[in-house]
Image (tube, rainbow, N blue to C red; front, top):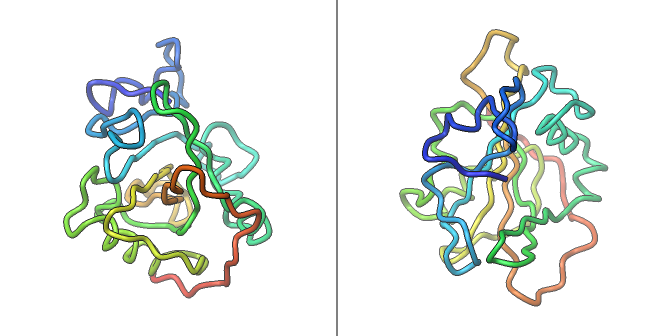
Length: 183
């Protein structure tokens, strides 16, 4: 995961800065990246999909695997580490489609991460039964979707997770139930 001086630098460039339609994974330029104590309350990472919502596609197309309840149940944790932050595990709490107008990528969300998490959970395909508190840190993975039409550029597919405390044992399976996401 790279980070530029803006959110355009790696939009269509690879890790080696070569032009590429899929770009690379990159953190929002407003995020503070580093050890867990220095992370932004909400760390947003972007990546392109193949615009077919194909979970076997390149880059963040693989996020669409979370639309399969069996995969979501079997994948309760995301690992994301930084060079100076060590190994960190994040427990998934929401998987959803949303309009870009939903402020899900704000590094320091208005009202706090607990309020952002609650709004995301209301949109989620599943109820993970996880509570996100005001002191938690969250990881937001975002990609484009064609769920609302190939020409639609106003929607995203998002997976959110909360940082597990140091030394906490990661769950082996998510206890999720199908939700009734708002459209």
